Length: 105
Length: 170
Image 1 (cartoon, each protein chain N blue to C red):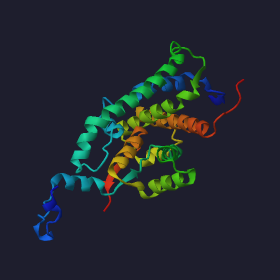
Image 2: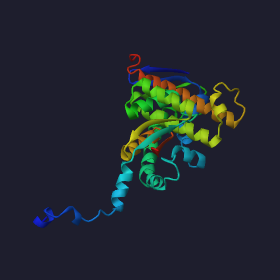
Image 3: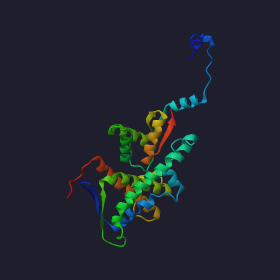
């Protein structure tokens, strides 16, 4: 940086140009949600145990989500950054639950 | 058939030859190779199919890891089931001892088998909820019985996980 740069008037600063890479990063930072879908085969007790293990939820909260899946067909288990959401979906698939990653509308 | 926990072992005793044969079939039942529906269920998509990039990357990077995980669980179950080998033609009841440390592998293996069978047979929700259907009059009835029997074992193993310790060893 030169002295003249420091003293430049605001009018001399160039307009920012959109950077596609930055745009991608912003997209990644938008919130995502982890959704678990109903499955008539998986046992209710098994689904509860998986929620406790994967998310560290207490039993009551895990059961509430399990019942929501059972009664409404789906439940949003978590929302936040994409990378973490992908990690949770992977864990849930490892336990053979029907789980997906969705953008928060 | 009786199930109990003796220290670090889940003991299934008095298994009649028919149930022993169903147990032997867990590893084979868990293999989805011959059924697209079973494969799609065991390796379901991580997002809406329109999220093409996520689904493509998942296929490349995550699915192989899932395959390894599922295969390891089935191999552990198959190893434990070797206790039943050589007794295929016996009419006598037998015993199976599952180390408690293998409980997770059994839960996973049983789940793979249940999901694969249900997908292969395209069972309806109504059929899956009918736990008392009898007698077994067809291959389909037998498959449904298998799903329910494996579910019963899962329930027991889950109970043991949630109540660690079990009964003291004999």
